[in-house]
Image (cartoon, rainbow, N blue to C red; front, side):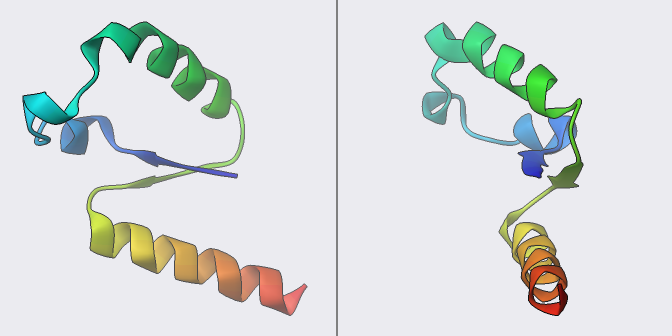
Length: 61
């Protein structure tokens, strides 16, 4: 399972935090994982909720 930042949310990140020279490698990575079970997140609170959901699901199994 992969948790990927939504495309729209990625645009809000500061440009100095992006490593543009690695962008092609990142896009290949994203495309690979988009073929798997993916959950998207928008911000840290959204990611926290999704991770909590995953931990709850894993605990039940």
